[in-house]
Length: 253
Ligand code: OAD
Image (cartoon, rainbow, N blue to C red; front, side):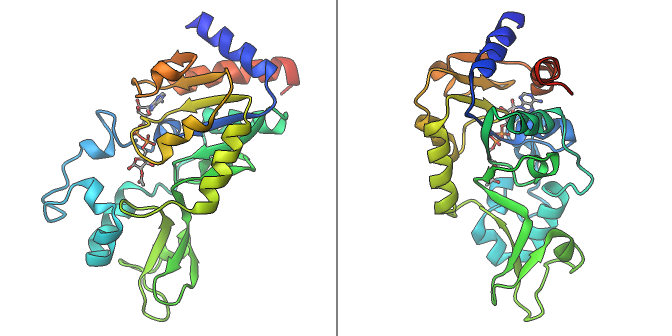
């Protein structure tokens, strides 16, 4: 581990345009479950409560339209964590940006914790739970607004309000995709962390990286481990603890 961490820190030291591509594993230390770990959301059995549907089916655009009340019950219970706070990974990534080393965070998470930690350029491939839109009239609502509207949340025009997140069966936002691809192809280092890289097209974004410093930090193996130059299968909190100490030492607290 120490040798790998040294390599990671020496690459960070030499880089000015790092991109971090992350997923649910970044937020597990904030108390938010991931999806595909043994304790992840997709290991749960919700079939009785949700008419035989699996979590992946419930989180689809089609299910939201057919069963808005059930969708929202699941969404509020399993994907929204109002008390969650950024952890050391979010905070250290924000500091890497502040000291001029990191150009963007590209995330599959919808929890807004990178923004809360102070990261300025955050590209949310799967949208954000912070923003919501009436499916009938397009009126925008905050998360707090829809939490106070009942289930399913309804607009003043009586339309159902949906979260601005990308559900299964829906396309990613074209602008976010092209900006993410551009950032990654211009990056001088790519750190992938806390993602199984199992979901497309998000996983495909690693292929835009053209440099020599491709790192994967993830507890479980991913399909791209062979392509990475450095694979660290350790808890992100420990690895980013070392990055935080590097920043403290060379850039001050
Ligand atoms: P996954 O649950 O598929 O993968 C999370 C990965 O993070 C796993 O491989 C874990 O081993 C790893 N992990 C968890 N905690 C960790 C920690 N503290 N340190 C190191 N590694 C850790 O989550 P995603 O790849 O983000 O999409 O899933 C992608 C998409 O699938 C999500 O955005 C969501 C889901 O369906 C939508 O909801 C549209």
